[in-house]
Image 1 (cartoon, each protein chain N blue to C red):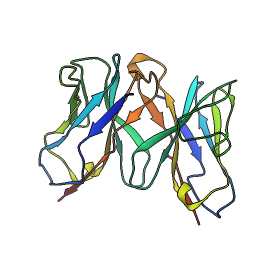
Image 2: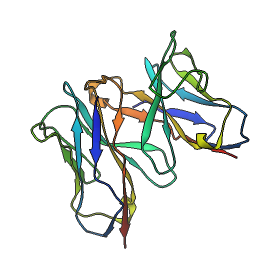
Image 3: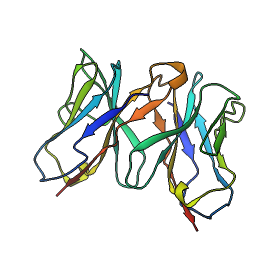
Length: 116
Length: 113
């Protein structure tokens, strides 16, 4: 299965600032996904990022708050903009397995964000 | 839309006890079903999966069978170890939401020696 490198692994940020999270995959993938895991909660999909097109955002998430880039088939970034303490969460990127035998989704190790 | 309902925790067990975590789903079409595990301080790992009805996924002593008639995918392990302490998530994809993963709320399992 794909190997995902995500960074930073954690950060503490001041409110009102922005943080960009990077996700690098060791193989080319069509779709990359960004999730948020709020403290003690399950994972919620933020958006789906396809190379060469605008990201598709889920209900409750907007591009101004979570701009996403997808410049090529192995890389994506998620920016958390104008942060507030409510943005404190773990953010994870994910990719889909490329064949039936490996069907499933691989996740990065996550970025633990604390906004103070 | 697609959804997953998972047994609430936390669950606390003694070593060598039997573990069951219930998971039921609602989906259109023919979803694939997954169990993910998140060990303390780590990211999410795929534990097992099943892509069609009656398939049984298994890994590390854990098993789950895709039951279309009861729309369930319960996770079981016959004899748990302290190292199985983690949060377990049931998830599905490929139903009405197509490729997107829909997660259950997660079940925290603590195994005591």
